[in-house]
Image 1: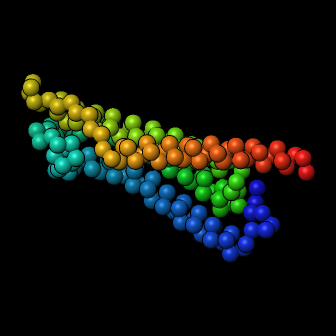
Image 2 (image 1 turned 30 degrees about the horizontal axis):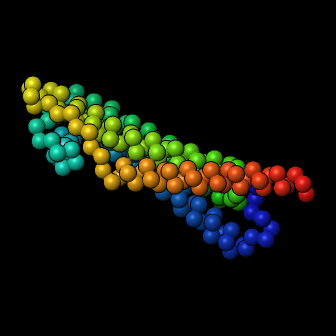
Image 3 (image 1 turned 90 degrees about the vertical axis):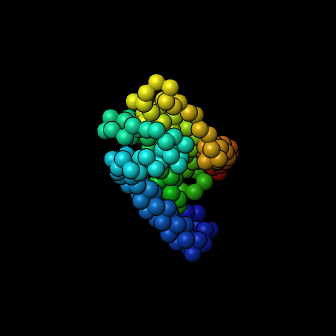
Length: 184
């Protein structure tokens, strides 16, 4: 559905520019998600710094196997992040075409909300598996299994739930608009 006839052309251009900017940022974020984890996990010194700073673990194994399993664990939130970015890409594609208040953008917003909620679970699971991968080769008694929760996980869950509520309202609004259009 294109922009309504009553929509101000300046506002149309503003939405199109914003949509283009958001979609470009999505491409940049997707490239970062695809490139950064393999690069990070290939550098033992970076892995050690991350283990110490982010995971609070100092005795880790930095051999290729441990780093490979750490990378594999990090692919869970990477996949969810790519799902979220694809949802944003599609949502702003709708906006750029003037499809603002119909069912399609509401469903993309719902998918984004589900991705954010999933990310809230995927991040601590991936961190736990990463710590396990880095300490599994340690001597008995020095292996670490930790489950870390942070405000980032909470915020992802909270924003996901907020967007889920908003998308549910928009789906209902689109349904009512479609019903009303049938009467005209």
